[in-house]
Image 1 (cartoon, rainbow, N blue to C red):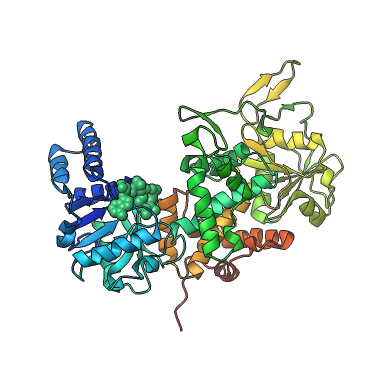
Image 2 (spheres, rainbow, N blue to C red):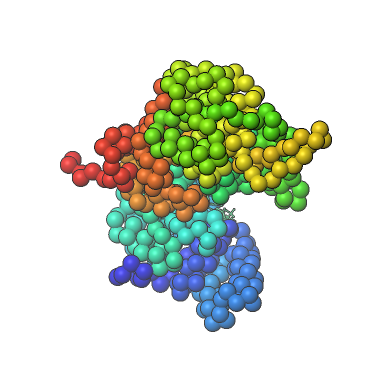
Length: 531
Ligand code: NAI
């Protein structure tokens, strides 16, 4: 059998809701006969009808041929009697997420099918081992965890429980490939790969918001424009719904016995209680009208306006942790005809630019032994060509903030304000309050660290972790390749400093990251297994 063929000719879907019908669609399109069963009378027929209507529309638009439409529809067979599933090779369960109900169903399925039939569950948060616990043949039970919407999210986690036979994993992985999806194998652990790897983004953004570092709009903008995430964390929480996201955050945290890396935030719990659930109710972090975000009217920091006279720069003194960052900043200053102050101690008129990692501006100013009143820090983790983040200290004088903002928030637009002053629009930078590590440094370092720790725990191979998180969450990079791209040493430096300054075990670097950064080797490197 080659990777993209399968000996599976038929399957049954139990539970024809959103996920069940998505899985049914890709299986039927791949030429597999699919029996559709739902406990609710008429639900399977209704699910099939909705899918048919959607496929007919796609055919009318030329996305499918008529022959493809007909063969797909012919493969979708509604059954009213669950006993009819006795003939299929694989059963995929996609019913309500409740352990007892799933356990009961699996017992019932075993009484209908042969001992060879594979029983797969699409559970996203329950242990596969627990679902199989009461089965007579737990060796044929495995997780087959798809993502919504199934036809577009071309990834599926294949999860063996403690008793699952390796051949079941092989069959499901080959079936995934046959249906056009990438099957990645994950250990039966809370959140598997994707929902585990995704814990860093939202929880760290919430922690940053909770510390008063920046508004949620500014955090979203920094992570979209500065780090390349498709959606900001607060836009994503609103879209997914706080009623879905918060319980997942709590569940993963509790299942790992209060591991600080996954710690949820009280704010989303409060929003859940206060029914500010996100887009679907018209209000979450943002407000919505007819599903569209309403732009906030309150002035944001990002609208900080700089009068050109205030922003006139005498010279700039640079304190950079990394030689390459210093060079980038020097080039940038030269290209903008700015004088560089290269004295050992900065002149009292110089703007002090600090390009540091995992630290706030106050601490960095002390380390560089410079006056914090002149200091503005700049995040150099992501490229200077991206949206920049500037962090003045608590005592930085306004004129130095204005200088840094005018320099890095450059935009071609210039306008005149009501006092007839020339105003530079500064869309290219966001100012944040003091934070131990910048927004992108904290969030990306946590994403990479979590990916590394998933590898350390042997939940999946580094390659599968990388692909699953990228495809499942739509991140610009997988966590392992992102670490390699930005440099494992830099990520380690960020985490080591934040951990030392905050004492919060959430930030302790994973040994997987620590060793590879120290050796200067790729984060994908796996050790030969000696024991
Ligand atoms: P859904 O509510 O859209 O569909 C569930 C269907 O199962 C309903 O049609 C219901 O009538 C039927 N059902 C309930 N109990 C049943 C039983 N005992 N026997 C037969 N049918 C039964 O739910 P959805 O969103 O499709 O989720 C299904 C499963 O997939 C859950 O385990 C969920 O955790 C998992 N999942 C959901 C994802 C999502 O984004 N919605 C993503 C990945 C996994």
